[in-house]
Amino acid sequence: MIHLLQGDITLFEGDAIVNAANSSLRGGGGVDGAIHKAAGPALLQECQEWVRHNGDLPTGKAMITKGGNLKARWVIHTVGPVWSSGTQDEDFLLSQCYINCLHLCVERNIRTVAFPNISTGVYGFPKTDAAEVAVASVRNFLSSSHTDLEVSFMCFDEENYTLYQKLL
Image (cartoon, rainbow, N blue to C red; front, side, top):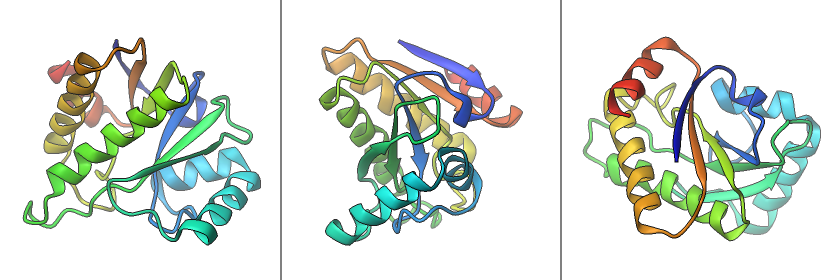
């Protein structure tokens, strides 16, 4: 099941939210900064510990931490691709972000998860293209797996909300 919501992902009342993280997992701007601020210092500590043991999180991969002060119990961190005119497998890498996050949900018995609009901010991925990749990746995953996972696309702005509304 797929839902479309508009608002602040840090207020999502479900099992997990996805963070559009940078590879160092140190927080940053946009949704990443908002999630780190709302979750509190325990999130950054857990992220730093993970990086010490595993190195930077590669583009397209995902890892999970506790949610700290968030309403969601878990934060799934994924690093989206930086847009480079579509010449660096950006569509594939963005799709991998969604698929790897969904695999973590299944592994952890997470029932509800909310995704932000990954890579559409400072990473410059065209919003229309990103929405198409996101919806197709989630639909394909849900149709090919045996899970009752509920996925929400949480759009902060009206432009992304309208794009997802047309696709869904």
